[in-house]
View 1 (cartoon, rainbow, N blue to C red):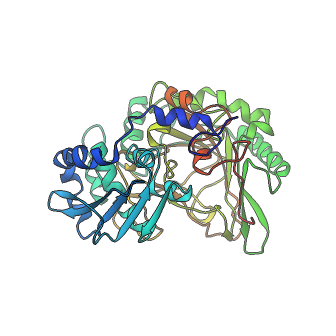
View 2: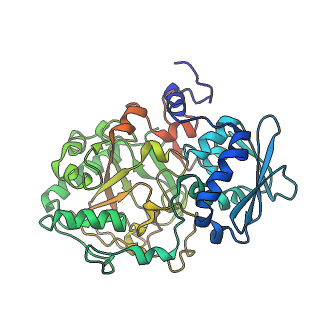
View 3: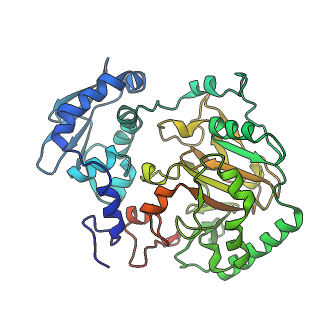
Length: 413
């Protein structure tokens, strides 16, 4: 397999980039950006108030600074006074503007370097840049005023549904609130069978397996926190890809949704462990396209079959309601302020759905014997299947995957 010009050894990445209009670095700043500011500057004016300036420098040393102003942004040539200066190629700049690559993804893969300042200075500007280019608003606590039911009343954000409830009510709730909680979709016997299959897969997964994530607990023991492509270990869990219940509810988001049975990590299980001190066992606030690929992967639905009780003690999922429709700042635990945070309390057999670009988190369990397990099946639209081949994930390119197209996520290494 030949290596593409990015150096990812994944030629399909090249095809994705070619599908998006390349931007001339200088022409974008001198012509396109002023027009975008005139159209969308009002979306970022308040957000950028007090932000230190940011500059981009291309390979030929052409440099432009982005400065917060009463119009939202003012652009000047050069980087005098810029607190953060980012050096990147014209191609990487285009990928960033198209949201094929985020600031974190660009720096992590070495496609951009910080000449001055820190990554946080670039990330401070990221939602505003995305808003200027896309016209999407920036997520704030004001989103509460938009979270309305079909009659115009405030949504009951902790509402759950049964499979017999009105399908259009469910569709509206999912699109508005960003998630859906369905009670008792799977029976007790099914949950027990699926749980046994997960335990068999866990027993067959060892540190170094390139299709799994590992963490380290406070006792110094490696624990598996995610197993991808579960069909390797279980025909029964692979068969759930074709379960009509999953497809029915995933298609509330889009009628063309298809299950990602052979790509984007396939069917997988998350396993929460207590007292994780190293690794990705406890995920902070994030989106699933956090390194890039928003126009390639979204809309994406994560359908979660809950095998155990989920609450704070057992490491439940929290979401920021309505966040999939907005550009978003990165936040840490405790920085949510008045944003509408929803904790998903679920029972074994419940089904949850959320968009991949929902801001969500799975904080550390408060119980010392936590062990929550949840099966996840991704659903995407046909464009995702056109761009991402079987056995691949968009993040493979960002992580500069090995020759097998995989990257081991093992805390001990």
